[in-house]
Image 1: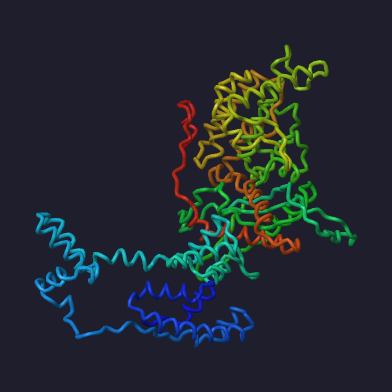
Image 2 (image 1 turned 60 degrees about the horizontal axis):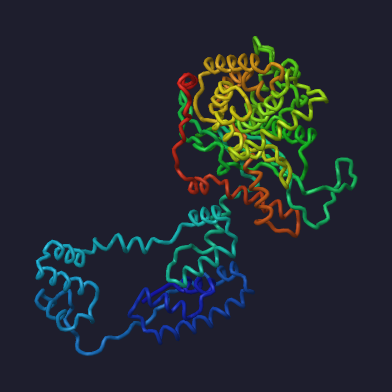
Amino acid sequence: MEIEREKIVNYWFDKLDEADVLKLLEEQAPELAKTEANKLLKLERLHFSTKWKNANYTRVRFMKINAEWLQVKLVFPLKRARGPKQKDFDHSCRKTKLKRLRDAPKEYSAEQHGLAAAAKMWAGGHRIAAKAVESMTKSPEANMSVQNSKADVTLSPQEAIALISRNEFSKSQYKDLRATSLRKGVNLYPSYDRVLEEKKKCYPSAEEAELILICKWGGDGTGGQSRYNQVFYDEDEDGELVEFSDSHIFAVSMVPLRLLVKQNDNTTTIWNNESPSSITLCRPIMLVFAKETTALTAKIITGIKKEISELKPTQIGKVTVTAHLSLTMIDGKVANNLTDCPSQSCFICLRSSYDLNLPIESHDSYDPNLFEFGLSPLHGYMRVMEHLLKVAYRLCLAEPKWRVPKKHKSEVTEREKAINQALKEQLGLHINEPRQKGGNSNSGNTARTFFAKREAVAEITGLNLELLERLSVILKLINSKADINVEAYAKYAEDTRKLYCDLYNFYPLSPTLHKLIVHGAVIIENAVLPIGYFSEEAGESRNKSIRNYRERHSRKFSREVSIEDVFKRLLLTSDPLISLRNRKTSKSLPLNLPDNAKHLIK
């Protein structure tokens, strides 16, 4: 029996002793002479220990120095047969085979037992079963699929990285998992060296450029980060030593959406991101230890936009790649910071809260670059829900007003508590409850449930059911990948605005709701893809990953090293080759639009 010395050495690197290796060899060759094989293993282990010491216990150096020595094939002796040579069973006639099996059936192989079983079945009248058993024992092709499944059971390095990424294994956890598998005789997992080499392919070199056709990008700040007992001082722009905080991180990321090939005047889609709101392809651009402020947001976003404007088409052989990046992975706060607009005003038309209920005749006078920011569909769900609840809290007043008089504030506060408690008890929704790491309990899932159970919400809050229905349709549309009919959407949104003004004109539209039903059609028309592709949900979800990776998958002795580990983890988990292996193929859920809204989709 021959086996490469490198394979034996890899077993020792996986912390298997001679007994474990001997057991693995015996499973591969049952006729192995154990005594001689054990002596050979001990001798090889002695040589290995000497060479391992000479390599200063460094695996890379060991493999390089002893490359020729590792390629040698070791010959393990097999047991010798005793007595006179007997005619081979396969070359004997059927009568002789049956005679041998009748005399000593326990001494023969599974194939021989199969033939004996077939003879018994034939004698018992089970002729079809007998033919099947005999055919399976005779035909090598019948066992080929089983043999191949055992031979090819080892995962590829890419599959192993997908497993590590999906389950968030550390290096020691993976190596322990592989060692356990080898002790059981199953070589399921590739060595960590092969995994590490494949990992390095996911990291771009310093000179490597990112080539993307259509993608979305944006930035968002996340708080509640763990603070470590380390000195964190650095020089500011004026050269003064300033203390910084690592409790906040500002992250900039992007998501590829669609790859097109242009032939003559036609474009053909050759790849499409079927889950544009998933984090699986959310690629990091920048991580900064800083709190999100107007100055920081403007500085970072402006700098990246300048770099984007200076991008040139990339030539790869005869293929030219042109990048098209849309700044849509932002929320309303970032949009206001970039346009230097107050939070209670619309950053597109610059109207104040008092004028947001009014219609707009034409968008020709507005800056078309502002339409690029998209509709922020995820935050649209949350902000519209919060706006409607504020309206509902004031419906207890005889004359509801936007600004509640002091004498009625207690009444509105009591109604707010009653509505929130009813939503919690009947629908399980936690509204405006503070969270430990900042923010409140109002999330995208909370808002989706709020509109999904709009009949119960209307009964609890007193809000108009038709208005809830229409807003639910609009929010479903902008969060889907459906191709929206712009003209139909514009009319539907305008009818919704009129209905709102007829019902609750005392309370001005919020900037978010104003953007959806007043500017929504123009923004959808200016988008290069269906508006749902440009959701900011991937960036929001990535904030959780950053917090998790920093706590569990980064070194803590230096902030520079820690954030580098987080950045590399983000690169690894969003690498297209690895991430697309992890993705589960699933059909998109239907929109379930009412009959009077189905015309909104092309």
